[in-house]
Length: 289
Length: 253
Ligand SMILES: Nc1ncnc2c1ncn2[C@@H]1O[C@H](COP(=O)(O)OP(=O)(O)O)[C@@H](O)[C@H]1O
Ligand SMILES: [Mg+2]
Image (cartoon, rainbow over all chains, first blue to last red; front, top):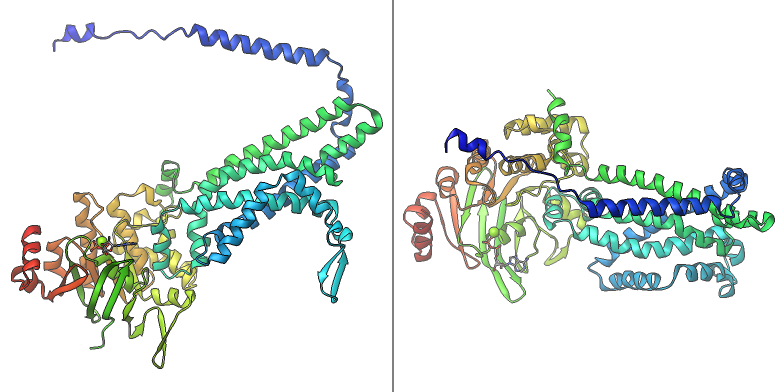
């Protein structure tokens, strides 16, 4: 091909104008502004919102919400890993126990489970081992315990399926290679299979943790003083319902945002070895002598 | 000489499929035995039985005079616990066709995993030994790379180093070069030749006839679950007695 014909082929690409999408975007912005404006001019005392944002009862409720989220997720993950491993056992009875647990606690609504735990005293007035050790159920089943059991145990049933899917996603060759260097089955799970399964497990667990932040609001029905219950207590006194609900909304949004950011870093941690490009620089720099 | 690995009347079924039939096999310290044979003849299964990745259903296999998978008391065999099986497996290293490196650990992390976690040796000592092994397989400069950053040939050499780190009495190789691009086969075979020259006891399942001829002391031919013929590389590759061996060898040469 000659020089001149090559230059004739140097054609300019004109970017498309995308009028439709730009118009749609403009309409959306307008709608958002209108909604914001109507809230601003609505029957909301923003000063009350501001006053209560860092009020003592609200902060106490916030801390209770955070602690319940961690406690219930902790219990859920513990039970979930256990149930997932039992679900894959060679022993049929153990397998069916895990299946039964998942079936039962995924099937019953969380709110109902909370109420059942809280009212356990109606079925078993005392709990203990025969005559040697026995306590009154109402003393044990505090709002915190009832909420923890209700939320944690049903979370475990969901987590079990997530963990199982994660474990099944790991190639069988990994467990065989671990066995071949003399690892026991427990070590293999702990050192080789679970750390890799984390890559699959962490994103849904992250989402479920965010779900749990909001699910803890159900614990208000068993008298647990999480943030929603606390703002309710405040508005029963001052009648500023909407303002205090906005305070709760604000804090839920803050928590969810922080957890989402944390989730990003945790996911990155567990993808070690897959983001090959990211580690290559370090590899070159730190080769031991 | 007392055999390191011995198989007597070994039987193995997968359902109705009789995969290993009356396997008789023995090898001494420092020997290199190649197993060749058509696909599906039971070569991998035999190696996996030695390392207890599969259980046999007749006969017995022993490593260093210890029956694998069972404890003998009088005339009865009792199943070993998970922990005891894990201990027995340390005596034999295994290199897989598909490498099976731990992708979440660096090259060095892969090699020290066994010594540190299983043998409970110190990290410092294990690292020193691991670096020496990586030197042997020619990958010391990749110590901090992740498996995903390595070529197939490099990954397989790391897998060999990982097995050697356990100081096994014998090494099992299941078609270690079959998953590699042709230009990478040589580097892995080269490492295996070095090991053979260092006196490592090895069973190598392979289709690399050149490797059998140069390195193996003995070649066993498997077909349909049996060891059909066994002998020196010259005997098996140049003048096999069995008709099936003859047609297989002439097909691959
Ligand atoms: N896990 C398994 N389950 C069922 N059958 C298997 C399994 N592994 C191997 N087999 C069968 O056992 C036979 C021998 O397989 P294998 O030992 O892999 O042969 P080779 O390694 O010589 O190609 C084949 O018929 C194969 O289909
Ligand atoms: Mg095979």
